[in-house]
Length: 427
Image (cartoon, rainbow, N blue to C red; front, side, top):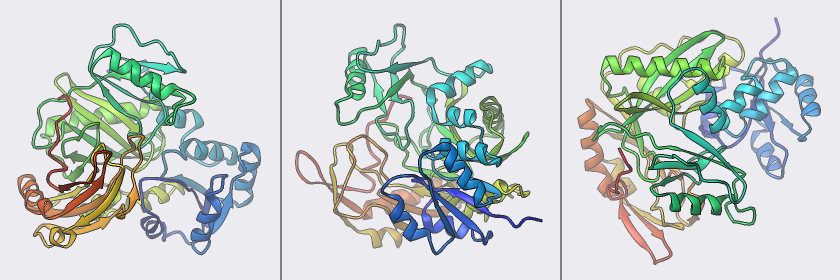
């Protein structure tokens, strides 16, 4: 029997490098596949001691041949951007993975919506806008969401309340000479959630796919979104009733089949609307911070699970009843912030009963992106006996930490609790 050799198509993704290496430590033979470009040398230095390194050339045929030559028996990625590359490599090397067509549907929001509609799945009306001067769609009901057809981390994602606002935004983003140029955009009617405070009006479904078999790992509850569509926390187990959870899981499974997903872990975000659950989007990899959350709550290592599935090994991802509620909270910068200047009170936050750890993700002195890409300043985690006590823990702990930002109007300081207290988006 051939010894397993796992290829990891490396890129910016939903798991930290240290967590990746721990999760894949079950496989002693790793091959890190790096994209062509100047960053590859830096990553190669970091990864060389953990496994073999294969740097791509950008020539699909040559790269597939190079992957065949290293005799990988499985392939996986934890990066949204790397999904199409991994799919092409897998097809060229004869390895199980998303087909190139499925990878396109997973990473192109327009194609994803179209595939869902073709399979009878209710979706918001959506249009593709391409190139400068693109025609704003007639009959679009507002508010709407304008976003790149391909994009991660909520980059350049906006809530549009008037047609004039949408036209101006689209012209700016599609301007080939602009600082934030997008090749094409999707505009779609905004899904309006049912009142769900103090929780979010959406959830995510974590699934494992192997051929025709789809295992639901769990349904992840969310804290309310911050504008414009920024997550600021999640928890497990969710706060849905059994009937609604069943609808959500069934919708996620129907959608994965419609997109042709047959391999690996997926993360499906679903809005709870007055008309029933509706898919926000499907990601063909582990969701952000999901491995940390499920690891504490259930003992599962989803990075390991993804690696084993890629190698064709059977993985039991069923979860047992969880005592209490496990949660994560992320501090997010002010929309107008240009730089994180300082942080105070982090130790006081972690001394709050119920909060068990905090990880600093952005260091003071770091410039913040201006394209609206989601930025997580930190990750605060903990557990509580109930959903209500989870909220109470956050209410007690978050005022202790304070963030100072540089903005065009000068320095602004906000407490962790104040960063959550913003005008809500519709729904």
